[in-house]
Amino acid sequence: MRIRVGILGGSGYGGGELLRWLLVHPNVEIAWVTAHEHAGKSVADVHPNLRGLVELPLHPMPTVESIGSLTEDLECVFFALPHGRSMELVPGIPEGVKVIDLAGDFRLRDPAAFEAHYGKPHRAPEQLDRFVYGLTELRRAEIARASRVANPGCFATAILLGLAPLAAARLLVGPVIADAKTGSSGAGAKPLETTHHPRRANSFFAYKPFTHQHLPEIVQALTSVAEDQWSERLVLQVHSAPVVRGIFASLYLTLAEPMTAEEIGDLFRRFYADAPFIRLLGPNTSPDITWVKHTNFCDIGWAVRGRRAIVFTAIDNLVKGAAGQAVQNMNLMFGLDETTGLKWPGSHP
Image (spheres, rainbow, N blue to C red):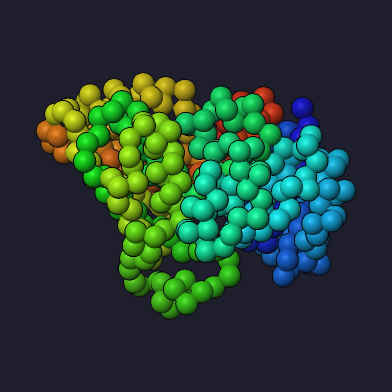
């Protein structure tokens, strides 16, 4: 099978990661890549790590009027655009072309929730029901049947993969505190005051208390796994860490009944029995973001004392938290083994 794809937004970190993985994918042909500010340059000019591997130019971004003709001969289109841009173009994609959106435009079912957390009205609410939430390990069968997939946020991926087995088993009571740290690449390629290297390199700070845009999608996904009122139970606090890649989440939980570390491990092993990118490290073992950098793996550890438990997860925010998971979902959508082109080890040290 040969899958002819286009990438809308190839100059950012997410677009660069998509290129890195798709260039070595045995079933993919990259037809074109677009960019906004860097249009007219080559991919290698913007992503020097890909020099010698690709000769593609960065084309200008299409208009609402031209998106249909640009994509009509493709099998799949990846959107790696800033939040709010995909919704303008997705309605013009031909019906037979599959869509994977890495932004937040189609993750939330409720357009009012989107406006509240992304600060802009949703301009294509009629498209929301067409999108499947693309957390692969939770929606594998639905993704395989889907023509439109909304890739999860990076924090949402790390947190949901740690909580889902216990939530699905109805073993969580009371509040859940998700304490997560991220590297600077999560803020994108364009520098901001809080991502500028002199500010970020030797600092550590919290941001967006109670208001992070990934909070409602975590609540939405948990509610679909376990029909509880998660909006009042989940406390999410994210932090800026002085690293470039990686998300590390510590999830503080109260269990419905006392459990042993071995019982929690058995639960996770059953839940993720068919999940090739979940690595269970065992009790009292912490993941390390250096072990998952540049990979599509999520490493999970845990600790428990009676009814108190902590689950630890680590992912690469640009791979399992973005581009790698998008490729994983593409594999499922086209009937391929979900690990195709993705099962690469990280580096050590």
